[in-house]
Image (cartoon, rainbow, N blue to C red; front, side, top):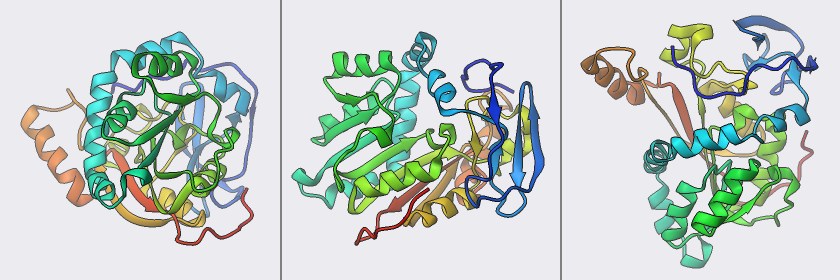
Amino acid sequence: MYKTWSTPVQDEARLKIPCALCDGEDFVPYLRCAGFAYVRCKRCSLVQMNPQPDEAAVKRRYSGADYFEYELENEKAFFNLGLLALADAGFYAIEEGLRPEERRVLDIGCATGALLGYLAGRGWRAEGVEINGKQAEYARRERGLTIHERPLEENQFPTGSFSVIIASHLIEHLRRPHSFLAETRRILTPRGHLLLTTPNCTGFQARLYANKWRSAIFDHLYLFSVKTISRLLREEGFHIEKTVTWGGLAAGSAPRPVKTLFDKLAKPLGFGDVVMIKAAAPLFQCLKFNR
């Protein structure tokens, strides 16, 4: 089974951590991969890599030129997938409901800026977060975009800065997903929208391929299900408006008619390889103590 790009497994210090969703410390083995393993929390069912590398080690994974080259090589395919995700999320209805001056978007993990450039061309005030310096520079130079190279929480955006935030295939890479979502909620306008996409560990492909699943990679610290990512969002004050899964079978894994059938069924039956959630910030941003 083909896996998505990932940094090579590193021989590095790793720490055992409690469950990132419920703070539980009772786990059962879930997947054993070459050089790392996932466990499932017995209390809430979150799947996480455990032990995990520290934050500095995680950040180093995305600093290399090879990561930039991978993203650049696949830019067109990823852009097209991004457009499909926007359509599934109802993005264009959101756009129509905003005055031009309200159209402020942040793409976190924006890579080479292809999707962000498209949104800027539609009149959005578009900014991105991308910690890979080569990708950030490319997006600035080739597309004239405003790109921030620090992790989200370090940028200190003003409260209520953006009406839409996009986080595609990002949250599974982060050590502290609660902290990330808390900051995302803070910088969204009241009733602003988060469009979040992540692999679905209870999808058909994940169940079929187990530790050979393409998303069971060293870079993914968490493998969310629809249930666990939804709970995480709700705990950070988001209201979930829409949930969609897609991707029935990987390309090349079955004859085209079979793949086409599985892909068509993945959305209505909810067994897709990827889950996209459209979540709204509350009307009133309440103070709360975040992790």
